[in-house]
Image 1 (cartoon, rainbow, N blue to C red):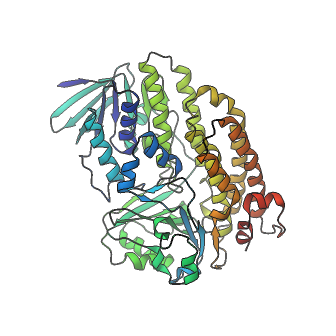
Image 2: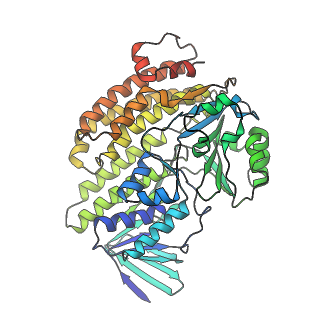
Image 3: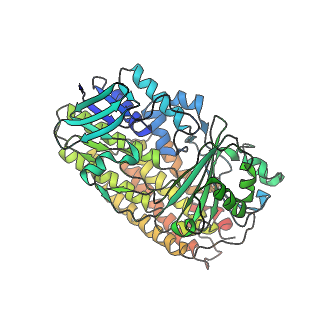
Length: 523
């Protein structure tokens, strides 16, 4: 039996594993890295993986940290924000209530073809001399010893790979999580199904109303948004891919999911015909490329990083929810922490304290993200709640989490200690606001459709948080403190407007936070 001796084993060659190997090689070209993957490259495009939308942190990681800017320009679509439609089904979408942006904020995000990215990364790694073993299955794995050991079966028979570091990036196979008993209960219950159709769906054609078309500054670009059709306990995503396909998914809490049989595409099409007939009409004659159903997708983990030479990244560790597309964000977080730990370990530095700190920070990020969903799906069809929720969640994401990532603060131990108090203050604010959303979500409200447009680009606080991210300031502590002062005002105004008896009078502080957006929300 052949034995390979390496420095780092990355078990899993999807986006999480390939990007980690790429980042590790970038930081430490001398490291001898092997990636093992059960699929063969090139993986198929259009249907390789779900998770085709990125937000600011994931986009920043892929484009800037991994230097993949040209690949994104060549192969992926610039995303035109997150857009939601509410109300009773209408054949003319100008009659739906719409939540989104009239024009783009400055930081680019993307609609991505996962297969294209994974093929690009695999080729780049091979060109740089990194070993990628594809078409192999893991028959055994042991991370308990100093030398980690993986046995794989493949075209060339059985091989044993040994290394002082092993990172599990093999998704829901959860190789390390199972072996070490790291799974822990997750309070969020969500279910999803998705499929790809070989057709480019353009929502801009769903109404010929001139006023509706004129809402968007760059004409005919609604289809480039991550479009959401909203209802009590569920949402439907419509995501375009650059290769002409469209990804469609339905995500539900248990109450909505158990009210219908989604075991086949035909059943799902029947549900769409009842609840979102315009979408059903669009896909009725399209070629369906795949169909997948997953129940109870959210998962937590007791520990992701260890000073004993192992770690987890991607869905091998945690997954919260597809709404807001945070999956690539957590790949970015996990891989940056792991790259720092592995680099420091091979440099002979003591990583015991650092590994515990990074694990604690990552867990805090995950808990904050999970709070955006837990117990709130009942309010996803509620126009007012979601108009406020998206502003708050964006504000917290851009003002806190994104600032940390954009300033490379997360792996700066001294800076994170200084930020400890303001970060705890931000967490308490978020917990308070999410509790108010959960309270309203219990009502599972659907407000009468009015055809209103809730334009997030007009919200002053969101512009502010974006401008801070785009600035060249190097005073992260002061910027964070200032952001949290503004977040306090956003939290206060948000909770007031959640109440049905909110005053029509707008104070100067509320105007500075929400501007005229407030009047549309309360309509």
